[in-house]
Image 1 (cartoon, rainbow, N blue to C red):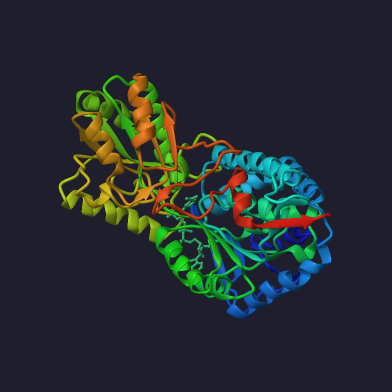
Image 2: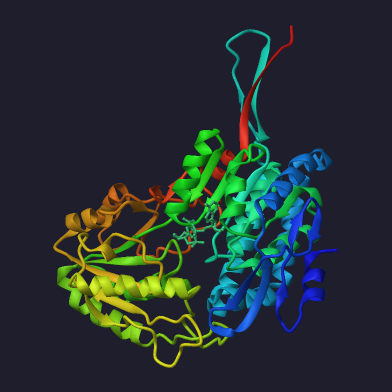
Length: 493
Ligand code: NAD
């Protein structure tokens, strides 16, 4: 029975009962349950999921590791075809999936559709890896020796994902992991269990062997078992820099491989010659997508003094016109934050920025009369420098820090003056400055006259400094994480 059916059967009063998938079976709930409420409407109980124990996680790891023998003879192209079928299932069910993402995560429905499109594109690309998992044939140093390199799956992997992109991120981990031949234990965020279950559903419906994947819901107890169990040889994690660094330190003790995608404090630089309308449009999109809770969101605007007032005026007008509300309403531009803790943390950042001398030009509070959800008004704070906390730390909310600079050189220095280095953009008509920016900015992704969001599905995704660690995700670089190289030498005379 696929989870799609199971989810339907277990739906009661529109609350979704979410189960673990362990050793090829959906398991009934453990004693402790996590209640997931709709972040836009706290009276809507979206899902109940298990708060699983370390022992459940251990059984899940053992199940996929021992189960690998059952699908060992499935070739990479055959695995790729299963991933392609999964992409087609997502396409045909995208209306239901979009509504589920919006209900559980909170983002506007159009953003849920965009996330689904990204998942499909990446799965289509990853399906082709099944025919690209090649090594190299290289010249021999000796006569009569044929030599080549080949790639082998590293073994069982733990895939740990966050709540902000709850459908596409699991897809872009599971698809290449499976095509590369790695048994998978997937641990989603406890905030988005039903979306995670639908992801696993889709792969099983597409024909993924039941022994190839496990899904374990839960918190740190599950996470720590995945990170420390010797059967797990690789950990692909997306989440905060704090948790990612802790995982890396633990994994290093037993030489487990890590692929970490973490936080950002991304700048959008606007030079004096920029097309200001384009820069404002891009800034609104980049800073308010998923209510500013996206690792690639812009959270610092670094603007050259001579255009700062003109830019700020237009930006503030646009922020004031943003319609905040439940994402299921197609006229809403921005949804709620993920939970009450995030709401409190974002507001505390703004309070401290004010105390440090920042000037709130718009927002800076919960919108009145919207206490039924975790809403926060789009916020712009002027007068910020790298000395201010809000000019350095990731806020993860709809809050933009405005940083005025004298010239290009100060703009680059300011852009680089943080521990993070995920993505970045610059608005200018000057080709020389554009190329100099690409050269000098400390970021894994850089855009010229474009938003910081929206990398392509065949391009490596990741950052420099404290934003990423290990082989990049998305694109073919991720093959380097899920496989190990082997060099073979064959003497034939
Ligand atoms: P988080 O670090 O709190 O949690 C991420 C995942 O790790 C969750 O599944 C969580 O349950 C799990 N986890 C928590 N403690 C753990 C532990 N000790 N061991 C193992 N797993 C553990 O992050 P979040 O709040 O879910 O997501 C927001 C963060 O994710 C932001 O910092 C954002 O920038 C980052 N993010 C980065 C990218 C990227 O690709 N660079 C993409 C999306 C989000």
